[in-house]
Image (tube, rainbow, N blue to C red; front, side, top):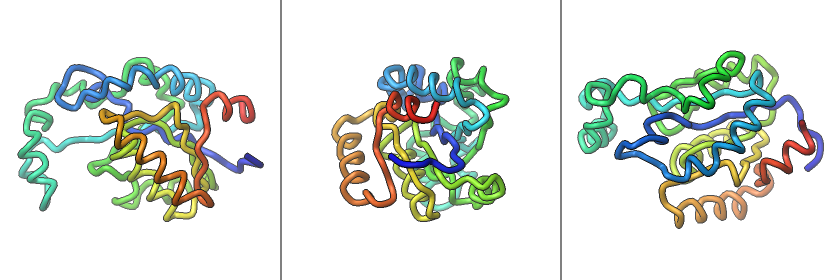
Length: 194
């Protein structure tokens, strides 16, 4: 794998609303949690947990996001219990020193806040975990590539509610972005970098 520079673990949307019994439940989340807990536990000060925050009301969002939340009305703030935006309990205990980064879209890069934070810390490498592989993880990864980060996706620490598109997303990332992205297993990363 070679030398890793200044790195951060960007853990995508490991929240109660995906881990528990909601319309957005991702059953696989339980399967990848041990790997994420191990990495984040060993390197909590290097870990940033993104959280996907639905609006209070569908009408609070612009354009097609409004349509999206009209479909998923039960996941808006007025219907979803407040605590469901929180991280899964096993990860919430790591904050601090781990940090939150809240976002309203699939990608954490859109509003322009995350990149300057990482640049101020001289980060050049992102280790990406979380869910879902074919939605928020994919958006996070592609944005990181566009911003010239070295990206390592831990393939046994990402999950989706759909096996086919999870597999297709990992294949796409491996085949089309091989110069800018590496896929590896959590144990492999930890054995080299702690």
